[in-house]
Image 1 (cartoon, rainbow, N blue to C red):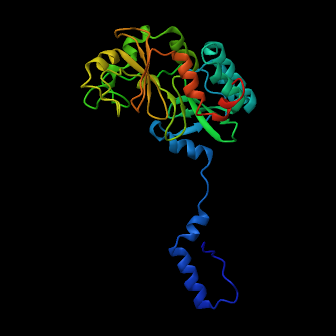
Image 2: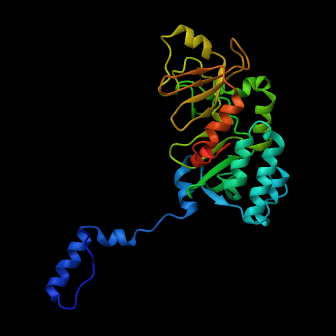
Image 3: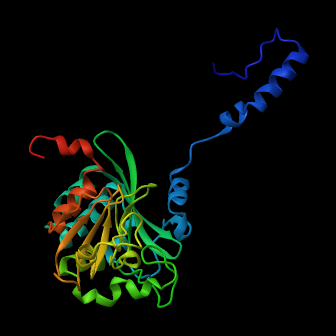
Length: 294
């Protein structure tokens, strides 16, 4: 039964002191004082690895490296901001990510310009068909997150080598044109602000899959055939389950797309954009998948 820190006038002075101290020891007052985190506090907690997140409320400096549409965001209404970002995505990749664009138009409630450390990002506020509110952030295509040579390892290859040696930057000209366009014009990475996000990797995290040994749960060092297939493939997307989507760039079959399930049920030679569209939008708005004709 819950303890209520309400003291009756009929309780004696000594009893009041005893009840008050008992409530303090049980943490009743600390729970009462506890408040919900603000949206910005939640974002900073979820995105703590990249510096402080702060919203941009005025026009950015003229020399800030930004798409022109992004510059106007602080002066627009929330609905207008969503429309601007959805239109830009539609222009560059709407033909291959129609459901993702539709998700932003249908569920988007805001698309705010923010600074994450020294990088500009756009933070999307979305409410899906179940009423669940969630947040996504997209990186600035004009501030690519290429790793520096000899820089620290973040995601991917083991900690005794530089991530630079395995990053997609070295073979960027081999990336399919539409995928390059997404990164160069729409977002350098697109992720959910949750602890287990679905995400298009930022460029600094798009590294060679190789034998899989540098990705938790995917060590295939003892399987020569799988290692050969994974060689020259780069990871562009991670599903909530931990499963990975790779594109062969310089391996045995350039352009081939494989889905490496964390549960071991691999799917090979799949359609890149259909998979990305489904993987990204399905968990975000599950009820929409059950609509007739949807």
